Every structure is written in C-alpha cells, then in structure tokens.
Image 1: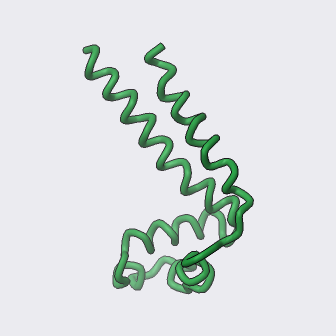
Image 2 (image 1 turned 30 degrees about the vertical axis):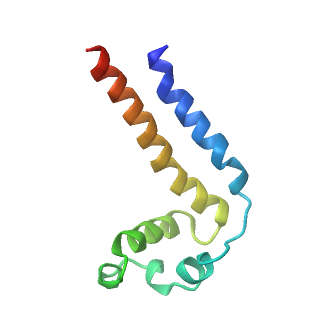
Length: 97
C-alpha cells in the first residue's frame, strides 16, 4: 500500500489541475506571461528581474509550450505533483526503515 501513495498523489494532483487546462490567462498572467518579452528567449535579463526564479520558470514554460495555456499548465503541474509524490515516498521509506 505504501508503494501506491506516490502514484495516488500524482493522480490526485493531475485531477486537481485538470479543470485549469482550458482556462485562459487571467489577472496578472497577461502582464507576467503574455506581454513579457523577457521570457521568450534565454538571456541574462531573466536574472536581472525583480523575481528571477519566477522569470526562469515562465521562460521554461514558454520554451516548452509557448503561449498555449493547456501546455503551460501541464508543464507547471508536473513539478508540484512530482515533489509531493517524492516527499511522500521518501518520508514513508524513512519512517519504515
């Protein structure tokens, strides 16, 4: 049963985010993503922004999926769900070791 926990977390994470795949960019997404020319190419400008880690993440999402919202959501969903599964599996292994 403990071996299934990471898989259950991955499935739950995808299920939670599934309804957001078709949603358009809203609120600050237009300014931070759609109109942000810095994220469209890898350059040192990404590190000079106020939020360099956010800019790097957005640039990676843009490189992988462009401005297609479903692809951007997919690429940003996997790190969150995989981290949760990894934490669950390592904490379970450490507890029972």
